[in-house]
Every structure is written in structure tokens, then in C-alpha cells.
Amino acid sequence: MSVQQIMTADETGEKLVQFASETADKLVKASLTRAQIRNIFTEVRQIESLWGMNRADALRRLNMLKPKLAYQTARTPQMKDLQSVLSEAITLVSNAASDEEKDQRFERFMDLFEAILAYHRAKGGRN
Image 1 (cartoon, rainbow, N blue to C red):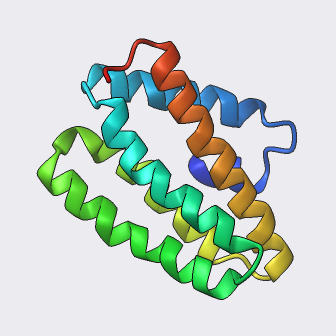
Image 2: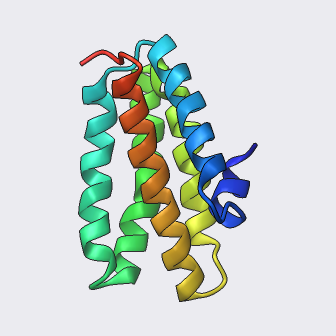
């Protein structure tokens, strides 16, 4: 199962849920803290609130998360799996052919990130 399948062909969301659970397992095993995930998630929530008003600015901010994730991963190697998943998902949102497709992929990106965060907490991820 790949991020691309989740972002483009997972109509029911079942693959997304399974993938999020597996990703959260990796993050818990790597000892990534909830606070480290939330630092990125807070930024993503701000982008989400901007998305409906100004998609172009929101998309630019979303793309700028990639270098931020790379920096965080260089400082905190435990972020590697999260960086890999989110960076690929961001690329898929950006490369969507139409605005409607961008909207759909961004919604799936949000669903994926929310599910990873929820599973991380449920699986005993550190604070």
C-alpha cells in the first residue's frame, strides 16, 4: 500500500486507516513524541483554514512544509517516517491536475494526518 494509492484511489478510506495505523506504529517504535507531531499538525491546521479562502497561498504554504519537515528530521531523526509520508502526500496534492482534484487530495491529506495522530496517541505514543 502506498501514499499514492491512498491519495488517489482509496474511495472507502479503508486503506488510509490501515496505512495510518501502520505509520503510527512506526512512529511509536521510533519514540516520536506527540508534541513533535503536533508542531507540524498545528501548521497544517492553519493551512486548512486558509485553503477555502485562498487555495494558491495555502498550496504554497503546504509546499513550504517540505523543507520544514526536512529540517525537523535532520534535528530529530525519529521524524523520518512521518516526513516521508507527508512529503509524498504534499507532492500528490500539488501535482493534481485540477482545482477539484487538489481539493479532494488535500482533504485526504488531512484525513491521513489526523488518523496518524489519533493512532499515535491510541497506541501509547509519548507526550
